[in-house]
Structures are given as structure tokens and as C-alpha cells.
Image 1 (cartoon, one colour):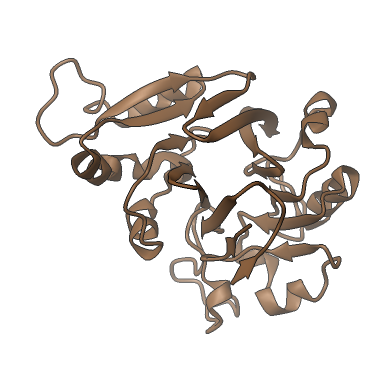
Image 2: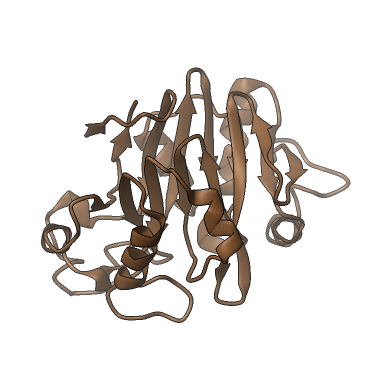
Length: 262
């Protein structure tokens, strides 16, 4: 599915739209997990952004290898991380294929705290004496300032995942925030005049560290983007077909494989 927005030649592919367990959940027999609708099948959350000949991903989920194969991604310039939880970093090892094909290390952009977590999770990647074939990365530490990756100009957006600081990102008139339940007022100013806004919405019931459906809708109304999509969706949200009918006309449930093309 292709949708056109005026966001300066930016193409967005939802590689995954599920929570840390994905959907279906192992051994679960609920209607959502048993659904035959492909829109109810969700890998762990991640997006691919392409602009002309440049491409970046936000987060490398545990499903990263399959996501790259499914989306037929044959080149990648960088990885941006939102935070250090395992469902957002576990696929880092599989950048090795890009290292081999592109003959260069992968640029990784993250906060210093996330870098420390990556070193703990993947000590062999950052070891002083490396063995052949391990992932090759160049870590670029970021804060709140705008930074550039190839043709992308990227503005970090601070959000809170309960007590854990996380980053969302704005590129042109597109913004992506996942695993959050609060965004400070000063950061909301960075989300003005969006054509397209992606925000996490875990389920209908309130949650301690994620926006629930109503919380996400309230935020969308406050920011007032032209279009909004919900991601990081659990099986507790309900069937895609039913929940979609309950949403405002400019708000949609994202699903795996959805493409937004200008």
C-alpha cells in the first residue's frame, strides 16, 4: 500500500509494528493471535527510511534479519536507536551482511547510555582484539542537536518511557516516537506542522510505560498532524479491522509492510 504525503522524497516502510513479544504471542489462543488477517501479524517495531539513494533504519529488532529480507533491503547507511531495550537492539549482529556487501563499517547513532548497553549486550563487537566476521560499527554519540546522515537531517525528540529517557526522531515533516508515555512540553514544540506522525499505542487499557490508545489519540489531537499512525501495538489492542473503524479519520493503525511514499 502506498500513500502520498508532501515530505520531500522520503519513503517510509514499517518493518515491524508489534511490541516486545510480537503478534501472535507464543502459545496465546486469543482471537487476535489466531487471526488470519495479515494486518494482525506484527514483528517487533522498526522503520526503514529511504531518501533518493540513502537508507537508514530506526532500531534493530530481534526480527531485523527477516525484516531486511522481507523488505528486500540491499543497502543501508546507518542505524538510529531510540533506547536500549532488547526488542529494539537485539538485531545488531545481523548488520554483518551489510558490512560484507558494502565493504565498510555501519554508522550507529545513539545516546551514550545506549552505547554502554550495546557494549554490554555485544561485548565481542567492541572488544579490543576482534575475531574475523564480527559486526563492524562506527558509533556516533548524539544528544538533542540536529545531526545529518547522508541526505537525512535528523532532529532528536526527547520522550520518557516511564523513568527511562528515550529518543524519537523528526525528519522533514515526518516524526517517529515509540516506547513512550510522556513527552515534555518543550519537546512537543519540535512536532509542530507535521504531515505525518507515528506514535506508539500499546493497547486500550492504560499502561505504566506506554501510551494507551486514548493517550495516543489525545497527543495526536494536541499536535494536530495531517496524518497519524499508531505502532508498537500488542494483541491486547484488538483486531486491526475492528479497531480501525473506531479511530478518527486522520488516524490509522500501522501494519507490517505499510509504505508511505511521496
